[in-house]
Length: 395
Image 1 (cartoon, rainbow, N blue to C red):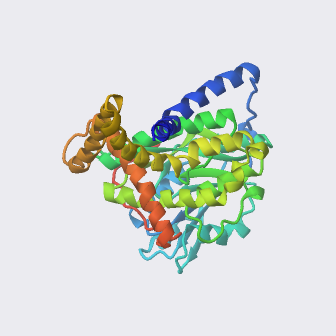
Image 2 (cartoon, helix red, strand yellow):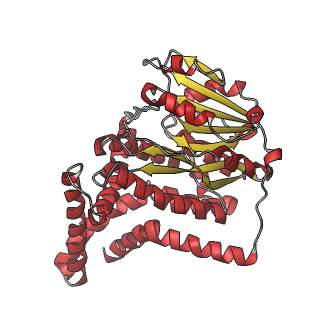
Image 3 (spheres, rainbow, N blue to C red):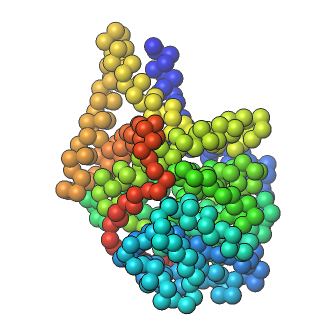
């Protein structure tokens, strides 16, 4: 029981603290022995790219999104802009058709984002495909900063950065998601420096057209699937923090729960799909990064949290001492997390409440996602989560 308890503590600590620290140390060692310079295209060398934006019922924000897209800094003769509307019922496709600079692919039948992208892939001829969401706004040089990486033939995909804007001090959903993505962005940056990013965010990522796979029906997180397939083929997925997509946080914790549960279900689904990546003798650093950064978060670590708590009760009763202290700390942590559920939207949220709440919230979502996946209730045609409304400065 003690071995299981301390092993669980070690696994949890490694997943959220140990791996980032180890990653940072490995990068420092790598730079000492292998100080290679990146290859970038100059402005005159930039390749032709296709920017693809899939959307469903985004009428409230679509015009602002289009204006943001048309202001992007990239040679106009090398930038093709495509919007893909899938079963929209709010007339947003009519707004898109008002702009001659944009090509619209519309389907009256809603089949989901995967099907929408697969439907238009045969028409995409540019060597570089860039994807972003309709409810995000890109910084002016985002496309330039992404496309420049493709001068290196080793680069198969480039992941941009996701930035979440919290709407005030009492926006728990936005603040929690924003804090998480700052942590996640640091890991992506270090992953990229060590070997490769393990999973791009769908808000902004790109791939070489020749490497773009057809996403099978039923895949829940297509951005992760595509980027991991490319990494599995031996190409590097680069992280570019100077290409970023900004969006507001979820409208509420209830809306954020929709996202987290479906992402958790998709993560568990991905574990089954990418079982071959556990072969470290074949995939080397990719296996190490995939297990440490992704697989543990979606499987053993959330399970360890529950096991550690249960075993701690037994050990505190039998042995007392340090186990009583640890039990008290765990109870305090989860009581603070519970308090967060009551103060959401009611008052200013200090970080001492926010971080325990969001950490617990994320891990509970893994259990909910697993149950939904087992019951077959998580559709690939995701239910759109409502976002906060706020103005966005992309300069």
